[in-house]
Figure 1 (cartoon, rainbow, N blue to C red):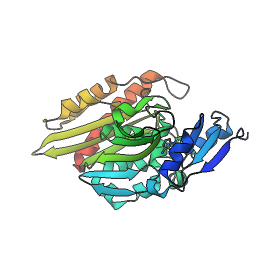
Figure 2 (figure 1 turned 90 degrees about the vertical axis):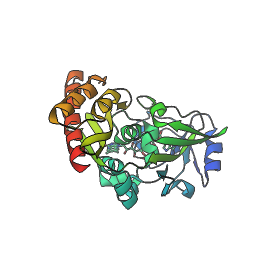
Figure 3 (figure 1 turned 45 degrees about the vertical axis):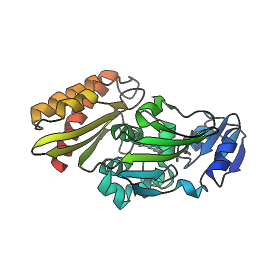
Figure 4 (figure 1 turned 180 degrees about the vertical axis):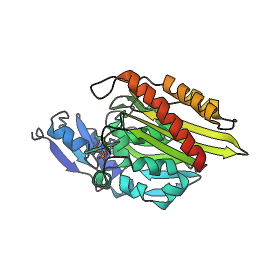
Length: 282
Ligand SMILES: Cc1cc2nc3c(=O)[nH]c(=O)nc-3n(C[C@H](O)[C@H](O)[C@H](O)COP(=O)(O)OP(=O)(O)OC[C@H]3O[C@@H](n4cnc5c(N)ncnc54)[C@H](O)[C@@H]3O)c2cc1C
């Protein structure tokens, strides 16, 4: 099937893109890895597509004041292979390796993955786990949205009409980390995926961050599981109890790919594996 007709504008600045996105029923085009199939299937029928691929000010990766600042147009593959991402936010680097295939990651962008808000996608869950913040430009200027407030439901975000996601700000968080993912075929979108990062001090867990994808309408932060680990030695028993708490926090959909109960059970298994591996790397 071919896309329904739409107007096309190639923006060369954030200002120009935001002005164009003020047109009713307009959509930004970044890497096109989700939008182009949606256009061709006619699931998306915008009146105007605003191509942001030439907005150079949206492509950057830099460390500032203890945070990693990422331009929304930064390609997955650029971030995945960046030394600073690998050393300072290793959870993000490992998660990026699970996003589709290299060909997808060469074109796909960090901002596009977040704005698309697929509940099974890796990057929304990573950003929720890391307490990232998103800078957004719109007709009324710039505002910041915390990752935990950004994802409202499957493919729904807090982005308002005409708003463009421009920058992702992630606190630097070295330490042990692990991504554990279950999918039907290698590199398919996850049935369930767990993202964990752990720092240890004196044999006890200092900080733990855990988020689950594919187990609810939005990424789920496993707050009770994190609290159960903090300040304790990470024995097998402590990890198993935390994994049960993480699974209890999920609200998995049941569909033809996997029933709800199976996804919840897998959330516990994957959380146990993820914390164990994160602890070993911490
Ligand atoms: C074969 C295949 C396998 C895949 N596997 C995975 C996978 O395993 N995990 C995974 O997470 N994804 C996967 N994807 C999806 C894909 O990687 C991402 O959803 C995609 O890369 C999104 O980024 P993009 O830059 O391509 O965005 P686009 O497709 O250009 O845009 C996606 C949506 O975001 C909006 N948008 C884009 N940028 C902005 C912005 N800066 N501000 C506001 N709105 C914006 C667009 O208007 C559109 O609605 C796969 C895709 C394919 C084709």
